[in-house]
Length: 174
Image (cartoon, rainbow, N blue to C red; front, side, top):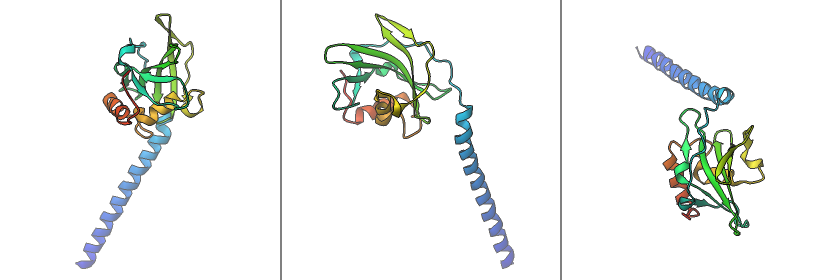
């Protein structure tokens, strides 16, 4: 009888290990193949924004440019999990560059969909995903690091991003 209990226990252990191995394998496969199967959902029109409610974040302490997002434009698409927002880069002389962008946290990529000029949005003709770390302006990378992404994943809610930005101690409302 003792031998059958040990044999039964071994079978249970083997089954548990097999299930755990299958789960890990499925997770690895989803990460590897999931990115290849990923498809961007239809991109919403650039949202209205306000310069009065901007939330600043630090990009480069040695730069004179100030970067901020409008919290009310921040969204996370439930279909493709892209974090989209309106970002404003302001110079000390009052010049502003305004863009509508999206971040793919798991891929470490950013895409600029449109720029704001002379009171209207101008969509880019062929926007492409770019590596955040290799762009000349690192604002998307810094936004991702300060709460726009949750490590290499997408935060669950926009409020999580805003909370993280405010908790960095660097963010402030302009």
